[in-house]
View 1 (cartoon, rainbow, N blue to C red):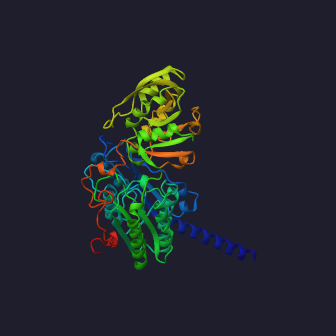
View 2: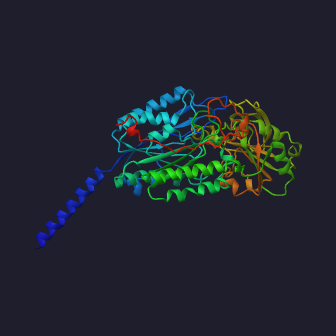
View 3: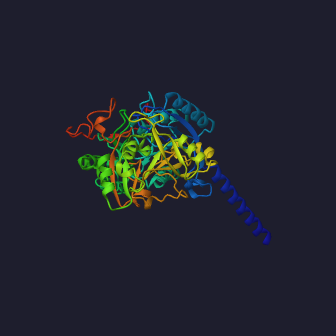
Length: 521
């Protein structure tokens, strides 16, 4: 009897092991690639697209539930190496190298395009759509594809065609970046595991509105209420995912426009949801405004200097690197340093974040903290509005030299290799274009400053939660908020607010076919 029991136990164990092995063998193979660049075309300099290994998000860790649900095969993600439009040569090189890696790891059951959506490449109308088309040409149209993007990206018809599932952020600032990307991946896994495959319907509606994130923050109306409608549409039977794309205002192609997309299996619900959101978007177009009051730079400085609230924040909107600006425009800083109220050490303290200037960092190291340093900063390549500034002042802080090599690999925009120079009552963070430089252990506490000026539009939460008052300055740069001045040539007109009196559009719901049926088979 005991022998029979042992044999039964062994049989069950072997069956369990066999099932486990079979389950392992049946894990879907999922490839990953993407382009994650947001860059203004209204910039004089150019940059290269660099393919970097994809860093897997925490929710796909090998020991996580989602991580164990599939065999994940990351390839490359294209990122910028500077500012301005991407060169065609570097884009082509990235695509070629990534396609080689994708081919080497075939076949795939599904694919994730880990994109931003606002990449501009010289001579390429729709870089993300073009890249997705080329990848589809390799992996085939039977593979289930999901795409995740920034809401300030472009959901073009080509992107809609070559994806089966799509999702985008629903908050600006992007507090839900991780949540949104995870949702896109989770939807893909659910469709694989359930056997449902690609949703039957993708409704796409172009909304002829082109605004920046500064005018459409979801912390403020009407964007707050507009995006709050998404869960209601998403909860309808037969609806899988819902997205509203603001679009990228500093691009200049036919795809640059707001878009609504709804995907799911119920044609009526998918179409009705897309139409409802698109119509609401259009209806509230004239209500969009800056989240904080917007004025000329001089008026913003007048208000800040006169204010008793501290820290008083000023957004240097025209050169926001987070929105596609170069981060090296000196136009604003030059005018700040000319203010007589700030030229005395006893004036109101103003922290300026930030301006590139490797030469100044080197000089600061030579003279040390407390010494006097002088060097040119900013406008190394983007000097369209103002040339480099000869900055002269006391070294308040300089990062250790050993940080330079490691930080330099990340590009000047994220560099921790900084110096803080005090001139008059102005503290200038030099060596980076980041509006949120790491000031830990520098001796500078932004919350104790009278005024903080950052190269941002709407403030990220780090600054938003600190500010006691806040205004937004109309400053010069490649992400200028005066859209009427931008030299558009290729966007589809009419477009609000460039054509404020345009007639109401039809807001046609287009049901985009699956890439599988692109050629009728």
